[in-house]
Image (cartoon, rainbow, N blue to C red; front, side, top):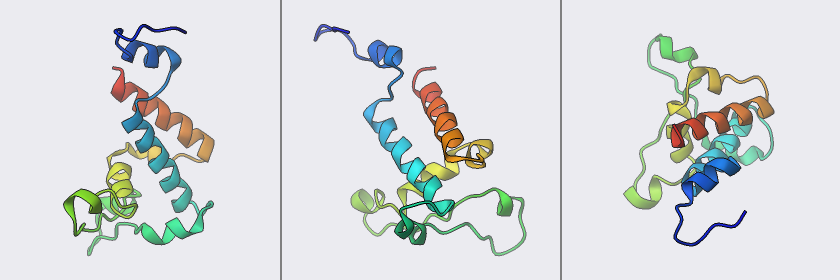
Length: 119
């Protein structure tokens, strides 16, 4: 597909069913988060994620949320794997977080992100 340089790229990305770069990064981070939570490789990422445990019994206890640690640096700290993926993970719908398999999660996640970019 040839596109002139003065044409807008969004319709082309939509036709090819591609996500913009920022959403592709979110996709990759969330897939790694899913793998870490389900003890799939790479195992060292599992240590960076902490499940949310409220001090008392709440409905959110069983929601599969992650604890978001405070970042020391605003610009670089918010991009650390221990900070950025929990924010993204907690913003996902619960049915997406509770997907039974990796392939199902990837499919649902791409559809979710695609709908948020191209309404």
